[in-house]
Amino acid sequence: MRTTEQAKNCSNAKGGGMSVLYYEHLSLGARFKDGLVAGYACDEETQQADVLLADMSHVCLTLLSGKSAQDFAEATFAGKKLLVGECSFEAVLTGDGNVSSIPMLARTGNSEYLCADASPRAEILNAWLSFIKSASRDGFCPYAGLNLEDVTGSHVVLGLSGKRARDVLLDYTSKESLPMPGQVNSCMLDRIPCVVVCIPTNECCSYMLFVPPQFAVVLWRSLLSFTFVSPACSEDFVLRVSNDIDSLDALNNTDTISISKRDLARNGLVRPENDYIGSHGLAQRWEASKA
Image (cartoon, rainbow, N blue to C red):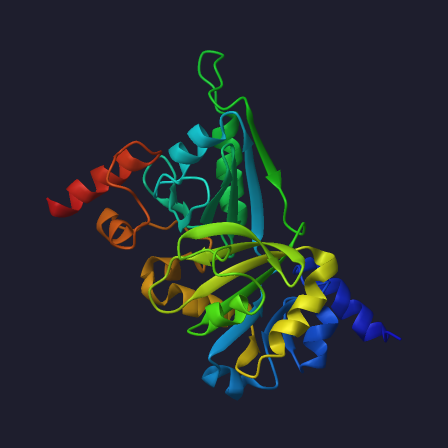
């Protein structure tokens, strides 16, 4: 039976996107801050763990779909132009070349993309995407066929990261269905239908698992049954993922962010072509820095 304090904490956790796994975190001795897990009783073990498992339910998820989804994605997301089944971190720039955010973008269909932003800039990003979607000139709206849908909460997002993370997932599914780095695929993880994103990083193997809420507790417990898998807060997972993408460190605030074109390109966050929104502003800043 819930105490008054537990009910209050659970309400806060729902606001942080952890309602489904809240009592799982409690049973592991979790500490909470602002409705999110800040650590566990086994923090020292976590630091030594081969594989980290994190509840990433606070990640803001936006689904882009419709006949103009590809044109919109390739105009607003400055990184690699994705084929179906590919994913990458991509910078989204404002017109003057400042960074709106750097979300993970996955192309899940011919006319469908899933944008995932775990940073404090998710609201800024969504406001900018909505503004571009509604932009028109002389009565012409280039993205009239686009649907932008907030699907946060439609799935519980689990982060799995570590050198043996792939081995863990291969215990549930086949080598053929499990995506390689930079890929996304639908997988059955022990008969649970999930979307699996393999994050393109160099440091270690990292995944985002999009799990139907009704199966989240079962899969969470199952993954923790591996002796070398430890629960971790979302910050620990993000730190592992961002170790070789230093530009992601700049996203921890909601101030105006300026990152040089050289640094964005070095991290693979913008493509060589100047065919995305903000490319001219970014180029002008680059030229000014060399003067």
